[in-house]
Amino acid sequence: MTSILKTSLATLRNMSSKPLIVICGTTGVGKSKLGIELALALSAKSENYPYRGARVINADSMQVYMGMDIITNKVPLEERFGVEHLLMDYKKPGEQLTGPEWIKDAINAVEETHSRGQVPIVVGGTSYWIQHLIFPERMASLCKSAEESPGDKQTPLPSEPLSNALAALPPELLSLFDNLPEQAPTADLDPQLSLRLHKLLAAVDPLVSQRWHWRDSRKVLTNLRIIQENRRLASEIIEEQSRITSKPRYRTLCFWLYAQPEVLKPRLDERVDQMIAQGLLDEIKTLRAIATAGVGPESQSPANESPQMDYTLGIYQSIGYKEFHEYLGAPEPSEAAFRLAVEQMKLGTRRYAKRQVAWIRNKLLPAVNAANAESQAECGQSIVPMYLLDATELGEAWKTGVLDIGNAITKAFLEGDPLPDPSTLSQTASEMLAVRDRPTDPMAVLSANRRMICPVCTTDPDQPVMVDGVKWEMHERSRGHRRMTGRDKRLPRSPSAYKDVEAALNSEDGPDT
Image (cartoon, rainbow, N blue to C red; front, side, top):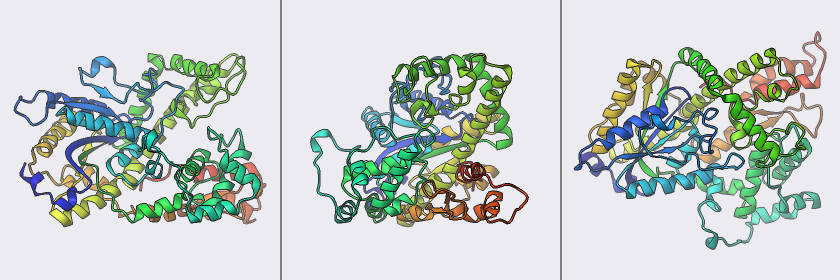
């Protein structure tokens, strides 16, 4: 364990020296399989080995829900080979689970696993959760409610900036602040409330309001709740976080399973076909029944009507649920509607995989690199070594390129032996791990991601067209923007067209840079 002992006290400050293994990546690359295989290998070690096996901790935001095994792509029980899986199947389909709540549960699961002398292996595609589990002090809503017990809660006096902002609010917005809705409205179903919430956030905390589109009512409401519960502006909390160096919670080994897109896409399409053959539509019908019966947050329609769907909440975000809504809700579903739903589900799955890669490269990897750069300067080693394992090919190639390498690196990590340079594992690893430096300081991230209102494309001041600042030049070159400026006289002006342009520009399906 010599390399562990070399780690400086400064590097270990605020970090447990006990190990954590993380497996992240897109859907369809074998994350769950690798987690199970690593756990089985650790369980087969001799009694003299420092660790007595391992447990898998689920980090997939859809697999936390009970049942619905097909739509959430859970590994069948018989394929887990006795490996215990935590934080899976522990929420009812109608319930909501926030990131801070999962992180609190995950910390408890990690600590319990450590207390048993076992290694926790976090596996999942929700990289946002994984990143905030590894790096504390970076999620504002954790500052209070998620980490305090009920007996600890006291209502502090509001900060001076918040007091001043509240004093300047008109009565209707002050009333809204004091009586925030339990559920975030859906912008399509209730645009007026969505706009009022964003207007309130803009009046109270203009810096943070620029980060979120008014249609992203869930994020807007979350920030208002952070302000309400902490009695401080969200921007105050973010500024405070910026002054804190985020040390990893644990000595972490991170595996990123990656497959080349041209190979992964047909694999994902085939997976959708398999899910349908296994009974996907029956699960979706069950979810629709839950929503209609009033178990979940979507029950806004009479029992004899199709429920009004909010696809941003809980398990209802699962790919396939929204895509088959029209087909299953039709009095006489057609074959054409079925084929369209299948294609939409395949497209949604491919887009999700693309977003997963983008998050890892744009968010998680820069945070890992920043932590490793600091620890390299302090003690000459990476504190969160991250390895890309090439899962492009399955079968024997997956065994040698993913499983065998993963087992060897895990053994070296746990035993304190020297680790290989991550960029040397493969050409793909060298290319994908080479990302340009991005800001990890919370205030810098906030400033870099602010949204701008386009006065040219905004036809209704109450529903402004908002564009991500980094996409502003692309917006100015867009056909919709040119129409509004009168450069393209051939096409009629249609407000709906600009809404489509706005949606396209603000989607998360951009380039993986």
